[in-house]
View 1 (cartoon, one colour):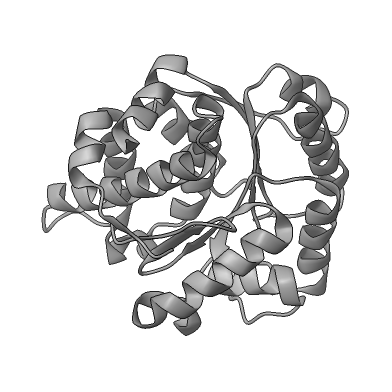
View 2 (cartoon, rainbow, N blue to C red):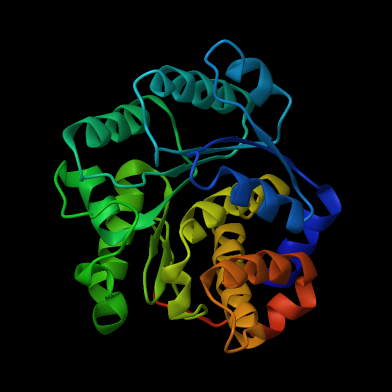
Length: 273
């Protein structure tokens, strides 16, 4: 199943509009190209509606949020909703400041997101207004492997309340909608040493959704598994002289060289609900 969803991305080559952060914009663009999709990076309020109209999906990332980006995000999101394009939200650092958390709430209140992807503290901040997020890092509460059931239940409830798919990234990734919950065990802990792995995942999730509009949660699951498999493949290539910069490049290379058969063979996930 997952392999076909990835092959659809390669065949359909969706064009994805990214309003993302300047720290990882280049990586997000390159990993979209690696999975045979195409990126557009546009954030000026004067053009986002026009740009998103010619695209197949939209990824919004609040990692380096400034005030004048919020109206652009809202305009692009609403236009994507009007056109039926899938929209992904990456609420980077939600909970770390009142400004950032308020902006995330405003986005959720005015735009329908097909997928919201973040670490546990970020997702908690979206529903509680407070959090202990350290920004782009995961902290101790995000090590969900020892309490998968509780986090799965939480993710499912949030997904139901917000009418979305929730991805909670951590040692074990949780993918949930109101009815189904998956736990993904792909990945490698060195991925936490590369800034932007989550941002890249959010961008390719938009591509997987755009290429598989009738299978949203399965498309999201495929994207999460693909990123985890890439982390494993990349780590296998490292030599003792290599570090996190090489590892980042190898992750992008792994996505470039991945096809549906390889994803199908290496994906590791279980149905929680």
